[in-house]
Image 1 (cartoon, rainbow, N blue to C red):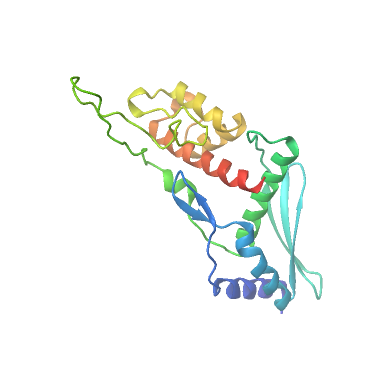
Image 2 (cartoon, rainbow, N blue to C red):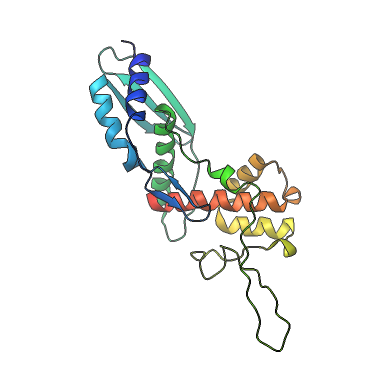
Length: 221
């Protein structure tokens, strides 16, 4: 049996198992797989079929070699490395968070592990509004409160409601959530190559994606 056949067999066996995602993104309200959810069964399956996944990192790339333990033939999966600047973490913790995050995606790619799409989850979705009345005798007035308010945003205040939205302010808020490189890459994927092109829909999607990355990476640090 070739290494390709062995990997495909391992995928098939893995997908017959009932894996439950333990990670939870509170912003977009979806579950995601953490390494501990699928690495143990993958190791067991790989041992049975005769392959071993080996992950390595360089400054620019990460790769997983799926190696046939009998003849040494290999299938390689690669991913570009990224960066993270997590609050309260030193450089080694930031590096560990990125490596854990990329490693998880290499496993998901190699073994075809499908989960919720974090970007699609927030695309075109505005933050919910909660009505709140002022005291009499003034006229009652609904006050907008988003999931990113100071009370429940885990310290990331600054959410911009649609009526006060400007592309410049949106970019400034996004920069409080991630590095300039991460923000620009996220906006580019959403269709904005300059900050002046940011729409409110792009802004809400970008916040959801960046918070998803920060939340998952914090858990890995």
